[in-house]
Image (cartoon, rainbow over all chains, first blue to last red; front, side, top):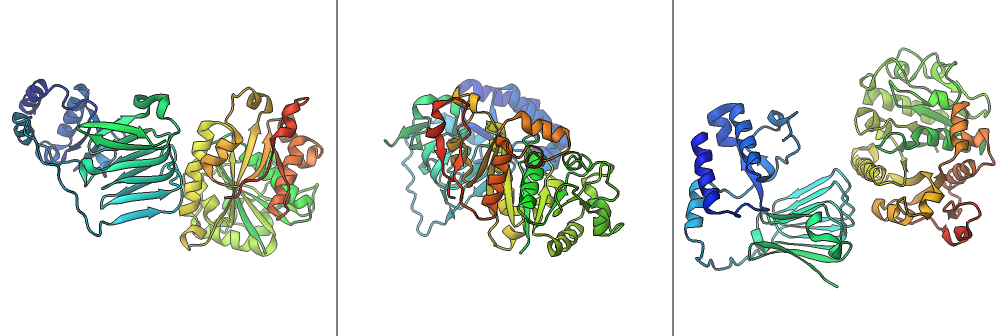
Length: 216
Length: 273
C-alpha cells in the first residue's frame, strides 16, 4: 500500500494539476480483495489526504461504508479504468494529438422523463441521453451515459458523458444547479457565479475544461 | 364517495397536525362526515389539538393489531357531530403498524366516512409511508423557506412513487398548503415568494395560512382554529381551503400586511398543475 501511494505521489508530482477539479471514482474491488476492509479505508483516507475530489466508489459493498464519512458517495458511478501504469503511459506522451473520436450511435437509446425529478430521486441511465420535461430539484441527481437535456430548471446535479465521454453536453432552460459534470470534469455552483444563474445554459467539455455558456 | 386525504410535509414543525385538525373540522362544519387519523405513533399530538386527550382509551395500534374494534377507538368530537378522531398510541412506535393492518382499518373507515384525514408524522420513514400509502389525495404542508420546500419536494416524489395509487398507475391528487406565512417578512423580502415556491414544487395551491397567534392559542385550548375562532384570518383560510377540496372555486389571496396598500395587488389565482 505504501509503495503504491509513493508511486502515486511521484506521478502526482510529475503531473501537477492532472487531478485538479477532476472528479474521481475509485474502484476499490482489488483493494478489498487483497487487503480486506481495512485497506479500503487506508486508500480512501490516502486519497482524501491528497486533496483529491472523490465523487464515487465502486467494487465495494455499500454496507462496508455505512456509518463512515464516505457513506454518501454514490456506488453506482463507474469511472474510466485508470491504473497507475496506463496513467504513466498517457502522461509520457502528453502532446500526441488524438484524433477526436467520432461518436456515431445509430439507434442510441434515450430516456424521456415526462415529469419533474424530485429531491432525493436519482435518475441513472448509462446507455444514452436523458431528456427531462420539468425541473430537476435541489437534492436530485441525473446521471447519463450521453447528454442531458432539461426542459425546466436544473437545481440538482447533472453528470453527463459516462459512456460518450467529452462528446456529451448538458442543456437546461434555467441553470440553478448544485453541480454539473461532463466526462470526469465537474463544477459546483460557486464556480460559475451569478452571471449564469437562472439562464438557459449549455455545459460542455472543451479541451479538458468544463465550459458553461448561456444561450441568450 | 369517501376520500382518503394524507396531510404530509417531510419536515417537522410546519403545521401538519394543526392543518389536519383545522381542515378536518372545517369539512365537518360543512356537513361532511370526517375522521382524523393520527399516524404519529409514539409522538401523538392530534388528540391534544382536538382537545380529546382525556378521552383516549383505544388507539390506531390497537385497532391495527386487532386488540380493539374500530368503534371502540373512535372518539366523537363534542362540538361537531360529524367529526371523529382515531388517536395514535403514545407508548408504541411506528413498527407497531403494518401495511396490511392499516389497509384494513382504512377500508373500514371508508364505509363510514366521507373524509379520512391522515395526519402524517414528519420524516420519510415507515410512519410517513404508511400514512400516505392508501391516500386518494395529498395536502403537502409547506412553510415559505428553502428547507421546508426541498423536503416537500422529496415527499411529493414519494407520493408519486410509493403510494398505492402511484403503483397502480392511478393519479394521486396533490395540493399545496402554505402555512406560517408572514406578510410583514414577505414584504421585506425575507421569505420565499409564493410564485417561486409554486414554480419549484409544481403542485396547485390549496391555500395560504398566515402565521398567527390565533392558531397557537386555539391549539393550546385544544380546539381547531376553525371552531375556536371562526372569524380569524387563519380560520377563514382553512375554511376556504376546505371548500376548494369540495370542488368550489375560490380565489386565493396572498395575506398582506394590515394597512398595506399593496394588499389588493397580490390577489392570486390557484396555479394549475
